[in-house]
Image (cartoon, rainbow, N blue to C red; front, side, top):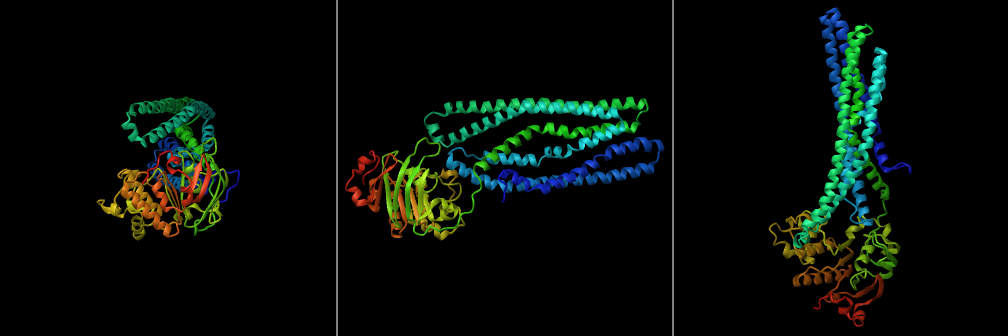
Length: 569
């Protein structure tokens, strides 16, 4: 999508529907012309039919009015359908972009991304497909209706101008008094929801350690703050909305009195009196609709700005050239990494080379930077300086979606996704049963899976809640090795495993080693080192030593190095 540098992506998306908006404008033009039918009909009834007492004229006028009203109804139905089409088009163009941008946001600012941005898109679509939009298309017709009222009698025109002036003041006051309150309510609602979401992720700890009441007190303060702000905004908006509505009804009644006064003096006909009341109603209708939907417009505007900011901060990435991973040789050149929101580098200028088929253990004290290192290698966290190369190609130049199948990753905090076991192992790609079973057998988890009531088709629940920690870790391992990736990184792969699980893990790594798969293992356990051929020792974010396994083990006390966190076997 070509885009002017001065034009935001969101504006460009809206501009793609400008032809449809033009069509809505044309339909609004025709509808507003047809809106003149009722006053003209009343004018003819009072000033022509009643004076002539002609039933034929009454019949023909009524027939024409019925046809024109049917036409107007059809035009309004089509206009509404076009708006729905615009809303769907905007949603289709933006939902995927927002989804991708949220993952980029989470990468640079963990825990900042949330589904609220999708809710913002929904609010935008709801406003654009609602009746409030029609007010903006109908507003220019206020001038036409005013001109007609002036043609009936100048007093009608001046009365309408006075009424519009009062309604505009009400609209302005409504904007001033509700805008800030709605913005505060939006921010408080987001804060309340984010706090609740983060708390629910640790529900076990909260319940077990008697923290629920204190946590709930904090959440309630945030939630009630949102409710107060929302109630203040709603109360303020309702006052001005009802005041506007009642003033408009009063004006339509008073213009009848003014018309009667003019008719008594024979300055206008009785038909003009009735027609003027109807036309005034049409004149004020767009203003009344704007006032009644103003709160929704403010919400739309707030959602628009929030999405616009997200898309601006994380622009659409250009399609990178497809470069497959064949050997998975890693080269780190003076790699420096500061964790997102961190103040100082955790990885400080690490350089090393890992060859195809190497099985490398990454060890070091807690806080040495082991997990941070692999997150930098995988581009989960962006590096500050230096380069990470795979097969001598800069990681930044690789298409992550395409190389994903060539990489396996088992994080320290295993996250499985709602679905079946087979879907999780296959990474939710098109299901290939042979590959799923092969990965499960290599990971040593096949026998465990077939014992479930539905085997591979068993649902694991949201986040794998139906599984134990060890089961999640073993299925996560099967997912990591699915489809024979060339590079596999395992972060504390045996932290939740029993003896059988550890034996299965060791056998799995042996198979990977035989297949010349490049494997990196973060571990605190000495027994896993026997199947590695190299060890990297990290200390305070620097590479203290990198050498063959037998050389390293002959020169260090592994038990003391790992603060006693390992288990001898």
